[in-house]
Length: 169
Image (cartoon, rainbow, N blue to C red; front, side, top):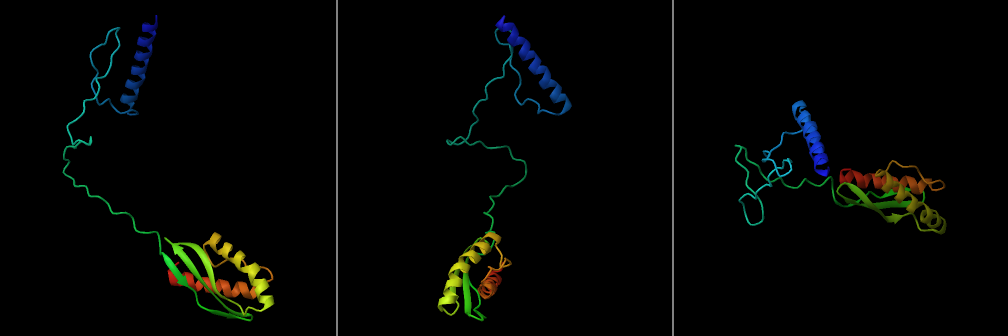
């Protein structure tokens, strides 16, 4: 009983495959079917290893075309550290440098931030990390100013913009 079910299932499977081949939905078999195995089932012969190198690679017949190994793609963009201009604000100069890897800004580092008086230091200590995160997230100097730090924002972002221009971003 088990053997007759296997024959029916195999015959149905072959019928579905044959219909697919005729309709162009399935590739034609690459190996010929072998003679019937015991019990009326058919099987395909196991592929034989082809002659090739010891590593198991095989050589393909020549098609008249030459293939060459491609070089790796060039980097997506510039890489390096780029210094922005010093921008004078009402509360001192602002200057940053950006670190770029394959065209992506990975860090914005302040070089000169304001006069250093107590009020400027308090404002800049809060505003500079926020501006850095906004620039890194947007990958642009076109981000919103930090509330209460208009002069810091203006100078910082102008320096970032100059550094990005130098980097070609």
